[in-house]
Image (cartoon, rainbow, N blue to C red; front, top):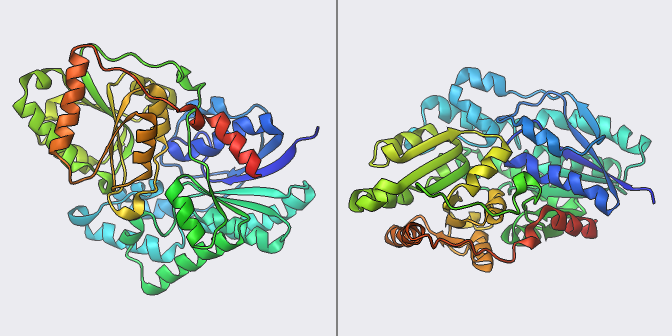
Length: 429
């Protein structure tokens, strides 16, 4: 039987690194198993914040790639202010850490580039793809955002070809993302963002969300929304084989990008107090960072008693990052603190689950992450106001580790395997 074609419109594709690339890379890997032929449309000359050449191994052999050039203003922004490099990854300075250059750059980013700085790729892509879809008899497309400009490509194509089946995949929300309120938007800019978001919700045949709460919120906003979470791939660095607890140091690790809006200051305070109060803990504790940690967060931790306990490995290839998860004893995950972010499920939680390690999570109350941790018995979720109960939790795990009894007891995680999630996707299609 001939496979059905699906065009995946995505900004992030290997050699891009980070979590944004993984979702549709993995779907593309397993779609052929369920009768679908993925075709990838992506920029010819993107400006990626992170690179990871090792992810090329997951690109399906002989996959059809379609590329066109994109113009992005990030090079100009970086000349104005070096910290603008963070914009590519959706990060920027906040509060007292903002210089006047940062404030100006954020205002320009929010009000001049709507919905984001990849907006200049929208019109050329609609023109190119309208012809491409007709010539290649493709009647199903996916747009993956952020950047949410890609959803405007889908919207334009849907207007040109009403019979087109369009799936708008929101890896993160648009106007409900925590940093949206930090964009210094004018009233008219905010209105334009919301009008475009509403048009995407109402015109896409299916809107995919990566969390249960986001799907519910999207439905309230008029979308035909379904939740398919992110997941883990059993073939990644043999992730189905559980790692061994480290023997010489009790290691708490954060894997990924940590920016100021998700900084668990209460955790650093709790760890600082544990190091000062408990000599045995101080002798055996290591705080490991794998990825990109904001300079100001790192500087703050280094000015505390934790200074000599930090191991900062920087960004590592994905496979190496998975190994570091497996070589840790506790794994840290953080979310934005406000209630509107309770639906965000950071993609790395699923690889954390596959590692079998206990997870220490921070975010708003009643978060979707807390639901997953309870269901899988994989750790505990805390608010950004907690301190004493965090100390108690960490100390309990430390004592278990010291006695060789820190067990790996996650359960019911097979539902989050990439292949099972792709099966769900094809059932929806």
